[in-house]
Image (cartoon, rainbow, N blue to C red):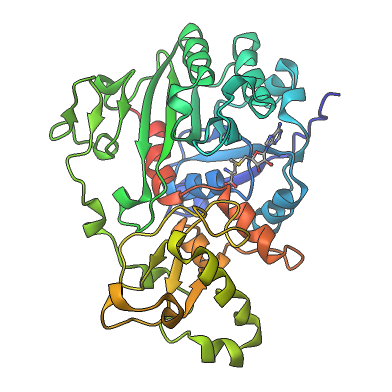
Length: 385
Ligand SMILES: C[S@@+](CC[C@H](N)C(=O)[O-])C[C@H]1O[C@@H](n2cnc3c(N)ncnc32)[C@H](O)[C@@H]1O
């Protein structure tokens, strides 16, 4: 079944800070906006990143198979993504959009360390492989591509295939593994990113072509002070980059005063309180952070359903001595969905439609991405040398 195409367009943004009408008057809008397709759009992390990056882009279409994610996207952007399996798109379908930029954040389960790591053999990898195979079949291939995935993707056979197809289709690539911690956000969420430009386009720092880079410095024009490791990869000089991060309290919607008493007064807040039974059973596996902490763990789509490895819990009582206080006394709570969105650097205007349940909100956010990381990467991708 082929997905029917709607050619209705919707806009990301003109350049940040300058209304487009004003820019037109000033004669600044000399260039046509880039026509962008957003694959695996989820709740719109890529779109928010493009907005934050201030790139001159027009979102031509977004695609996602998940009904609920599309509800959230429509709620925030006033446009419902195309609902269907990306695998069913043909080259002719995609050519009709006349897009020149593709943003893709395909499913990561085939590559996660906790998963079976079946890579390309996992059915959830098929749609991405198919979309890659379409590139050489296109009448008008994209000029730029941006791919986001989990760390582990870069060693997969899907990655190998992606690089092979991109090279054969005349793309140059630069790859990154970056975390929000490297952008001042107290949030550990390292992710893999591939930036690709089709020749004759090139990157501002072409000396990084074909490399996997672990520091954000090339994005900001720094060429020196990045180190080359034994296997020629750029590595971070600093193990303690979180020292430069803001404290977690800046990202909280309920401050330190939120304790058990507050929970009982404010009925709806009680849902964030961690029950004693969970503390007893899973206490030793919990990642506990404090309002003054400068790091918290990655929130996954299973946050709030499971405790182990799904994201940090917040101590709302600051103990005098941290290592001697019982967990019960810390008045532990879950981060709220708004706070997870804050740590993902989503804008304040982002919200959920009422019918989306708490668990669904966490699941959708857990699948999304860090705007603080993706925005500068997109800005770099869209910049001309
Ligand atoms: C890693 S998430 C991307 C989330 C997105 N970047 C965001 O900011 O929310 C992958 C998304 O791809 C969607 N998806 C997975 N397989 C798909 C397919 N074959 N066709 C269309 N969408 C698919 C899922 O519903 C999910 O929303």
